[in-house]
Image (cartoon, rainbow, N blue to C red; front, side, top):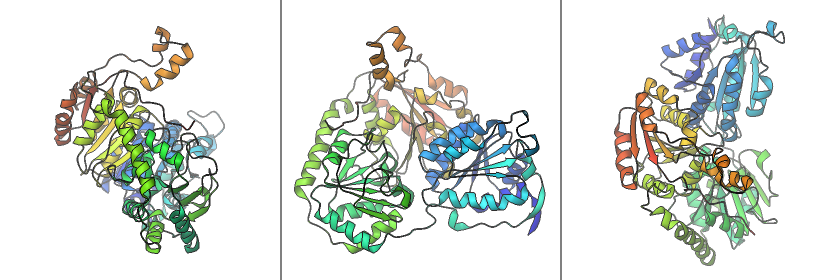
Length: 557
């Protein structure tokens, strides 16, 4: 035990767990931030609490480890709002907030708001830390719970608007770092062998099996095992957006992304399957297109590290509770290779080829303004072999999920789980986690408007991301729905989805970034080369067709 401030204890502990950056909106725990500086932890002061949370989320997903964000009492609910995306994405973000002193609670103190309900909705664990003596226990619990079972955000509410009653006070502390909980997954349990053998028997007997791989494959680092099992058992693989990088896009067994942000062929193939093996997937509404593409009565096998997920949305023939990587290794060790399922694989490839033919014209279009499908093709061809692609939601998620192929096993893909505007700050967090790798944020003008001010943060803090804006001066994903309500396109309906035309390159330059404008497909590769070799943050403003609207997801009749 040693006498030190809570600030020093907090700094030494997070440093011991390997956290290299903290993302925050002042005024919060300045003494702790000073102690973090002494230990070499980067301090990224943002222009908003949500952006701080999104940065921590991007950092955690790329590092597969806990991340840290902080805000004072009055900004706590903004931090909670930002934590929603980390919660939906199962990202181990530790959020620290200040709260009004206990003696002033429920007395209309300045900035007093009850933090319990907002954080209980978006955190696995939320604890009130009333003084320095309670910090060691709750901080240890925060790291442990953030990475265990299904990872997710946790929250500590420190006494004092800026946490000062905890961090500014001296106490006897022992810094204990449990390295086991410094990464995900901390444990790698294996499924029961009896259940593994039953699952393998069902997979061998099926005529039209499909694997649907989810974010658990990414969290477990099980790309090689997924590929090996699919090849050994001759099973097509569909990947959720969270597992997009986990199966080669050009592999003959690759189906693409199913669900609502999907390729038609992926939904068609899942719909025709006579057995679906969900691997590390929550089987949620997005990957199943509102629970529509898995026909009622289709047998299901599900593998997940969290037993609470097994059978949550679909009755299961077999439930495998275990770490994805180790359980797939079990399966590989226990099964012989099967003969290729030629009729089924042939039908799968027919679906895939038909989808490619259906989008060929748009993918190769030279029209101006540029088609987003052509933009994705050019980005796919120009993306560095070790790049991290960070996608916003909405059309950005649809285009990158369906039209942009990752061609190298070292490439990574993370995407927004629903909060438009997440892309830019998340890309900055990803760059902090992997500064040696090129990071590309793919967003639209609707997304970039949310946190455009964080370009100044990127410049000030030396975070050299590349941001590509699919600029069609609109939220054109909303066009169909709005006009369906109005009955036609009108001036009033246009007001609900169209923006003014904006030169984002000039705005970026005014903030100290390099701003590039692209009008033609032939200019994209050169712009990306210039951007990735630059020593400053870069924004590429790509002028695209406002009528470039993604088709609705395929559904069974």
